[in-house]
Structures are given as structure tokens and as C-alpha cells.
Picture 1: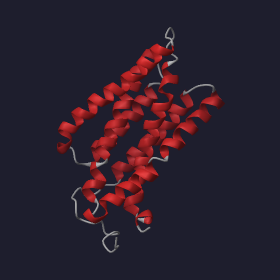
Picture 2: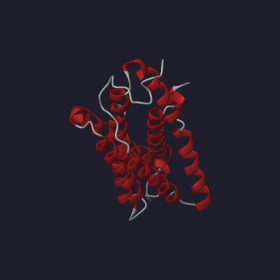
Picture 3: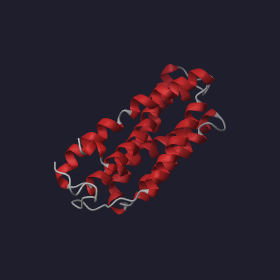
Length: 200
């Protein structure tokens, strides 16, 4: 229960909540966005939907090889800003331009999650890493329910996916700025001051 009200844990949960908002919105609504590209059937849309995630898989593997060199907060925030910028750009220009932008947005969304998990694993005391990760996953993944529902509501009200993409962009930018403003210690086993006195 102490973890639920710890400021550092709330920070991690809020950042991961935002990441899952972006990720799950792209998962559920990417086919709808691609459908705006005229001349493609349902099977073609399914094939096109796979391309951004294939790009993300390649990017994650490349990031994994060089992630040890990038241990500061800037890398996580930069990946989130890339996802936010490309989500916004997807609303501009022709549908093919939007498709390319969504490919980059998927890359930014998934690589930001790859960078993110270095933070709790590297900064939380060893004794609470496991329950801490469980708590972050449990609360953060609620964003996977919240964001697609809000995105769908905005799409129904406006008749377009543009409003939802704008909202998603704004939330991602705010989270990235918050991440930049909140520097965390990257050394395992050094408890933050507000957790040093807690028993697990």
C-alpha cells in the first residue's frame, strides 16, 4: 500500500499510463486511419497496418543494441516527442504522408517504452523492483482502456480521427515535458528519499 502513494511510483505510473494511451490508440485506430487511403480493400488495409509495427520491431532491436549508451531522461522524452510530433503530422497532407507519419509514431511509441523500463529497474531499491514493476504495469495499462475509448468518442462526435490525434499529441507532449522536468537517479540500490524509510 505504501507504494501506491509514493511520489516516485506515481511518477512512473503516470508516464507509463501515457505511453499505453499512445500505444493502444495506435493499435485500435490505425486501420481506421489507413482506411482513408482510397483504393484499398480490407485485406490491403490489414497488410498496411502491419508495416508500422514491423518498423517498430526493427527499431526496438536497434535500440536494444545501443540502449546502454542512453541512460538519461532525455532519450525517453525524445522518443515520446517523436511519437507526438508524428501523430500530429498524420493529420496533415495526403493519406500516404499520414501513413508514413504513423509508421514513425509507432517507432517512437514502442522505443519510448523500451527506454522507460530502464528507469524503474535502475532507480528503485532492489527489494521493491518486482512489486514496483507489477504496480506500474497494473495502473499504467489502464491507459489502454481509457485512450481508445476517448478516441472513439471524439471520432463519433467529430466524424473524423483528427480530433483524437490532436488530443493524443497534446497528452504525449505534456508527458514528455514532465519527464524532462523530473530527473531520476539511474543507479540501482539507491532509494529515493521518500522511500528510504519504508518497509516492504
